[in-house]
Image 1 (cartoon, chains in turn brown, orange):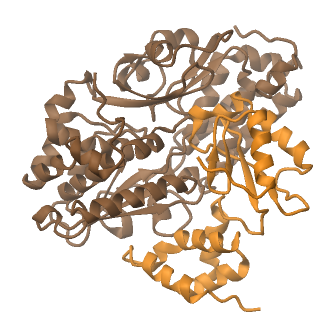
Image 2 (spheres, chains in turn red, cyan):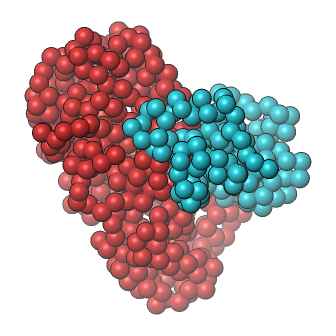
Image 3 (tube, one colour):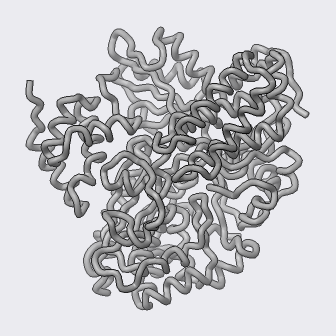
Length: 432
Length: 164
């Protein structure tokens, strides 16, 4: 099927307009805000940042009679390891995002929209700023949009290197000029969000799907995909495949079809060992689990994992699972905001224990310590970062226990350093 | 010595502050601007920014030290930031980093004596499909291998930052 989001040659405003762009905005401005929200509800579009919450429902939580300003925030703080789809979307189709934001802004009654983009994406911020200026010059953003009387400004706002700011309320804190430490909920952002005002926050990919939904209707969008997993999704594949990249596919596509057909399979000589299907925090799948699962919210949940951000990390049999978990633990320890004890301490201890496994200093009993620390983190913190560490720990240990045991016995696998060490050899360790 | 923000900086800051209903929301963008100008965020810079935004110094320092992109001391002309997260790791990032340490004769967090290179490893840069990835100042260099890295270092030594 034809892509809805990832299109070629629409990066410039003229080309985007020539391909039918900004007509949905015109159409939306002729509708009542409630009608737009209904259309988005009908589409079954779900949040593409990872949580999968229904977008239309989220918009409808904005109190209808609340006085004062409302805000729209686009979450472009793409930082979940393995994820690089929003960057691609911003480069290829920035106006779909801006148009989606203008429509969403109108639907929820916001006058301002902020795109919170990770600080490292300096080039992408520049690109968005240029796109915003071009759209403003044509009257698609700014005062009295297309003569409708609706005013809507969009600003980019760069972060400065903190994974936690991808979490909704940490992002709000950061956008207000504070440390990115998540807020307790309730109140939810729809009631008390940015600057204490009702706020809707959506991922880049979610907002970029809005123009097509307004153009062709919610039912059309809902007819793509499978069941409650409607529409297309961007899947960003990394790891040793022949053609890594971002692919737009209808939800429900088999995972192996993405790997084999779109990505051209694994590189010569590589054998599939495992797949992390939705970004580094989602539970890992073994090769056989990966072979049987489809890429939609429900199928991946049934397989014990999550669709997450759509970041498919392919792992081949030359990789050491203990080392990979150590890499992830180092990351989560580094990124824990330090607010909640189970996360701050738990991530640190997990990294320390894994360092012992890697150094050959760990005892087999410490496998259970990993479990118990992870168990003590799950669901016991303000935000899901602790869960994001605990889920890979539990799934890696459960599914690849033999590798942890071998490390505890002092057998080194020689795979620890990635490609470099593999070239120099080392005794092979087989996983069961 | 007192640290004085230039009039040009203040004019730019006023424009950035105007994007928000509260000026202090501009703190992170302004710290980025400050760093862009000076190469790092000095204690005096934090103090000046606190005064400009009428914030306690402690707030500015807390924010500066929370976010990893803010440098607290001068770095080399080119800040080499090698991604070390999972996708880059599988693509050989550790080897690239080790190679850089040897070639530049510095460890992570250090700057070469000539002041040209600072070396760091960083967490996921969000470009995992083109691993391994390194960021040089604000520019991404993707699909790296030893050969490409050597060619890039050679360019940088001559003061040329290749653009794509």
